[in-house]
Image: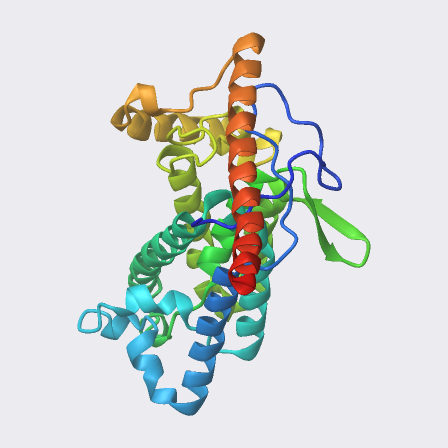
Length: 317
């Protein structure tokens, strides 16, 4: 099958809370790194090694706003080029650990589609932000500084984890853990603070912000849910205000309403995963999703057991 086998949905992940009525079917963390993620790690590490062997290749792979107009393809390639070793290591680890939880649910094709989409749009927006900062500040450094890295897609993965495993506790440092649903907001705050402390880090901020917003808009309004077959995820637990603390509701609610007016009107109502207020309907919706999940698990298990048996019978012949 295209996607790897889903994990057994019976056990709840450590730190997870029981799913609320109307919530998507339970998803548990993956146990193994996927082949797709391992292949992408090779791409990231290979890009870093290429820059060490041929430093001039950076001009043709990373976004340099002053040269982007002739080298338009750089907005698509920059997302896979890490310029420093810590960036290559951090992006590789983030890809492996986030991908093992996300790809088994989405499937390989949707997982790759998400990465390509987020990285490409982040590349375009990073170019636009750099040009805008140049006109605002007058600093030519914004036009000649190479922009690249996988951090836009990593920010998108955090939003994906918030959707799939919101109560999963992620280790930060020592004994401190933070739930996945708060990771996007934490990274947003941390990156904004670092942009003021370390001026050069401001080059990463637009890509991080773009990765979060682009991924949320895609998952909220456009992605075809692999478990329910519905378009988007309009549950309250994945609304725009849910990305921020409740104290910021007066600011985030108007923005959420603006997104709904602009994007919901363009989608067919029959395809939207509309929020359910009736507990009975919510329970039926959840049971339907769980049946779909069980069918996929059974099909994957049958395929895994049939292949060894076929190979054994062939060897005996």
